[in-house]
Amino acid sequence: MISVDNAYIVQYLKGHFEKEILNIEEPYGFLTIEVKKEGLIALLVAIKNDSVLHMNFLTDLCGVHYPESPNRELAVVYHLHSFINNVRLRLKVFIPASDPQIPSATAVFDTANWMERETFDFYGILFQGHPNLKRILNVDDMDYHPLLKQYRLEDGTRTDKVDSFFGR
Amino acid sequence: MANVVDAPDGYAGSGFFATSFDKIIGMARANSIWPLPFATSCCGIEFMATMSPHYDLARFGSERLSFSPRQADLLMVMGTIAKKMGPIVKQVYEQMAEPRWVIAVGACASSGGIFDTYSVLQGIDKVVPVDVYVPGCPPRPEQIIDGICKIQELIKNEPLRRRNSPEYQALLESYNIH
Image 1 (cartoon, each protein chain N blue to C red):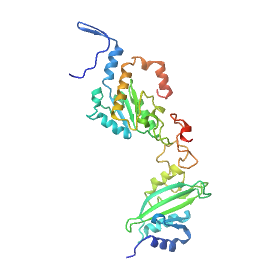
Image 2: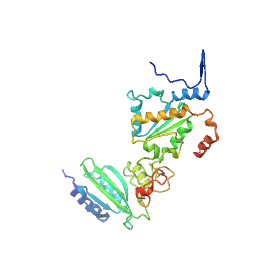
Image 3: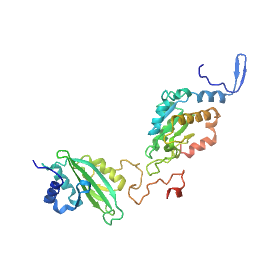
Image 4: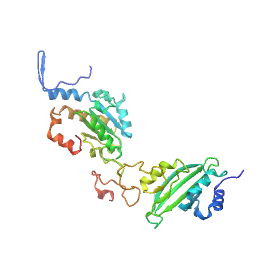
């Protein structure tokens, strides 16, 4: 039996998706691979259905905002888990804030549905092909995406404290 | 001896007692408040202790919780109110019949507390008028009881026509409540 570990996953992906891989690292032993957004869905389908890898569970999907990185301002991070091999894989896709679009993973993992809505809610990332891309946690009439770093975290309507004591 | 409240000021004689409606109705209302607990977080846990035998809100005539706003006299908001929850607090308040009172229990209900953030209402007085604020994070049951006693004082001393006054109507109008 093949033992599936980080080295095996890297070898598999280099064999099948060499052109889609931009960067490979292993922070704290957690295999993290940056891929191009064009190849993302094909890669997810392949590693989910592969008879050895069985990357069958999408643990988490979230966004990150890096305002200092030109044309790579937004990241979408996918945490995958193979229950059968008990190995995990993190995929990262970087997209520009000027065109925050990425294909939806809902066709591959049903669980991506609400997680993509949450990522849209907080970062404004548009998941192409999502069946119901609307806000999930914030109030419906909110007119911005609050975790983008150009917006302040504090609430401007607070009246019981003096700004200068709180560094704002 | 049973716990009986003192009679209000008035004229007592053989076979009669005379006082004003304000006082007698205020006394009756103050000692039979039906609270509606709107508990969203840790202050709600302190309220559960307040209701339990060790602290026992029944001693103040408030053991009968009303989970229908239509039968409640006192809205007790205990815990963080997210902005998404704000309209629900307001709707519950609107469903209560007059006379009605509101107590904001804890820092979050009073001012947003530590949650100075885009998703949290910075005090329920942004959506409904509040009669008594209880500070604390969370307040101890003694403090909640003190808040209830403050509400009782307000109820005892409220003129019967206060709710018809232009000032009160203007207050509700300022919250867009009709």
